Amino acid sequence: MIDPTTINPLALPSIVTENQTLNLSQSCVYCNSRCGSELEHFIPRAWGGTDKNSNLLWACSECNLSKSNHHPGKWYKAQPFCCPSRWESILVSTGLTEDEIDALQPTVCPKYVDLSPYWTDDKQLSIQKAKDKTGLDKRTLSAAKKGQLDRGQFETLYKLRDLASELAGRPLSLEEIFRDDD
Ligand SMILES: [Zn+2]
Image: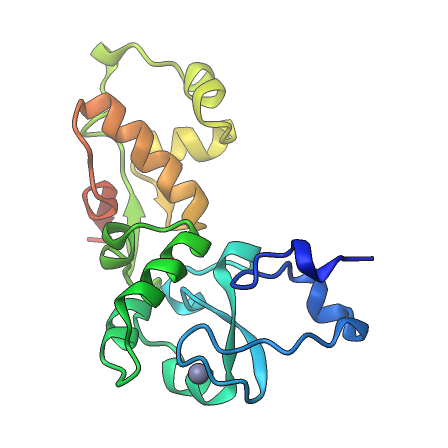
């Protein structure tokens, strides 16, 4: 049984959705209304959002509908109820930085992850070493090294970006590890 008092009110585990007995009355993370709370994807699936707890926030049905597949940051900042401290707490509960949200791209873009400009032979980083470093599987890593990895889950993309940043010796944005499909 889940103790509701131990749960981050902004990011409830998805298991709660299956446990109707909890019957928590959640206010909307965006507008603070208490009407019709539902779990919504902070980063929409169409922008690469996952079903992980950190990406699921309680929102009222009105906000959920209005937000839909819009860029989460641009949508929130265009709302009349936009509030900087509230936005800050949303960022904390999703574990995302402002830069990461700015860098979001719709996943319908035909782009590949390409670490080949950074992961050069002179870096002497084997797939095995990269696996130990990132926890990613070898197939993902060797595809990314060759520029043949389809865009995937954000957790994977961030790990690959961090790896590329280390190789490049400077912080890279997600954009810099993507390659257009042409
Ligand atoms: Zn709302």
